[in-house]
Structure formats: structure tokens, C-alpha cells
Image 1 (tube, rainbow over the protein chains, first blue to last red):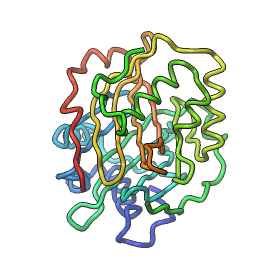
Image 2 (tube, rainbow over the protein chains, first blue to last red):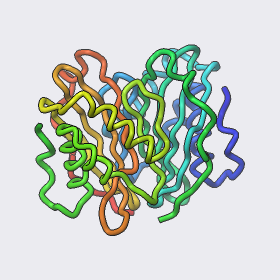
Image 3 (cartoon, rainbow over the protein chains, first blue to last red):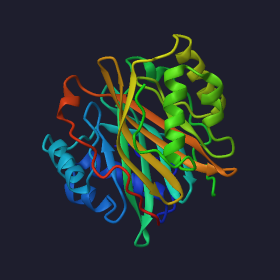
Image 4 (cartoon, chains in turn red, orange):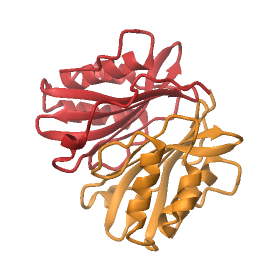
Length: 144
Length: 144
């Protein structure tokens, strides 16, 4: 798997985003569960699925997805990362083989670490990825 | 258009979410432009589109969408709303005729008002909406 080249600071939400894609590609249910916040509202929108609104159901959904095995050909291409309102927001493209998905990931600080509070992925239209150029200022932060 | 029944406080991000769907249904480009944050990183993922990463391109994308006219049969069904950190995060289902989309909207406080910093909508698989039951604690807030 190719993960963000932007993540050198292991204390940031960008590191948590890397850990998310590592768990995703490796179908590591325990690592995925550990990533999701426990004391913050969470929700998750898998491609085509209805929104999943509780941590327990989100963890179960990943276990279901992971039942198909690891996804070694997954690539995550970051498009934008920003710290807004105390939350880390990541936008990027997930590529699994020839399938491409626009995704949003949101991380909150909880118990001293960055935990996932939201994941939303939806399919790109065929051929769309070719329109995409290099990331726009992917590492910028805006603190408010 | 049916909008959230949860929004009675006109000062909240929920009110901004209502304004978003009003502008969307009415194809009101000026109202839509006014909603998007000006001094905060923004991005927008329309169904099938690549992520749009700048305010100017986001506004232009809505103008393009609105060129097809108003969408009076749009309905927004809130599923979860939470104040996390300093951001208002809304999850719901957009229904336009028989098409259903899972959506995430994120609002930040800017210049004393709630402005949109993120919109992500992706199609639900056919028949998925029937699985959805009543909202789970849609008005809860978690302040951290």
C-alpha cells in the first residue's frame, strides 16, 4: 500500500490517517477498532451503504469488510489535510485496483491521541481520476 | 423541500445546514456562495466528482449544478448531528426523487456565524434506504 508521503510527525492526525489506511489495507480489525473514538460521536459512510451511526456497528462493518481479506493494492492519495476547529480533516482518493473513491476522514483528539470520528467514501465516476492533478497545498493547517 | 425538523435555534450549525438545503433545493447560487467559509480550508465531494479543493471552484461547481434548475422534490433526512471540537458535523440522507445519497456536512464558526467547510455526498446502493430506521439521537452534542 502507498500511504501519505506527508506524515513524518507521529503525533498528528496525519499519522492517524496513515494508521487508518494501514489497518484498512492489512484488514486489521483490531487496529481499526483502536482507531475509532470512544467518547466522541462517530459515523461512517461506506460506498453505497447507509450511514452507520454507532461505534459498535462501525467496528462490525469493518470486520465484515475485512472478511474478504487484505487489500494490498490499496493506495491512498492525499488531496487536502487541514486542522480546523481542533479537528483534523483529510480529503483524498482511495484507489483499489481500477476502482477510485473520494474520501473524507475526520480525526479528533481524545485521551491524548488522535482518534477517528468520521469516514465517508463514495465512488468516483469512471475516468474521473485522470482529471486530478497534484494535491493543492495538502499540508496546510488553519487553526481556529 | 423537507428540511430538518431539528432546527429551531437559528444561531446553530443546524440552521446553517437548513440554509444549505434550502439553497440547494432552490438552486440559489448566491445563498450557496454565502454559506461557504472564506477564511477556513474547504472542500467538497459531489457524487462521482473528484474532490473540489478551493472555495472558488466549489462555488463554480454549485453554479454548474444549479444550471439545471431548482430541485423542489429534494428531501433531507437528518441522521446525526454533533458538535465535535469547534465543528458542527451533520450526517444525513439526501433524497431527490428515487435517488438517495449519504451525505456529510461540516460547519465551522467564522466571523460570528456558521459557515460550511465541507460537503460530501455519495450514492446509496439501490434499495438501501429501506434499511434505514429512525434517526439515532440526532440532536446530541458532544463538546470537547
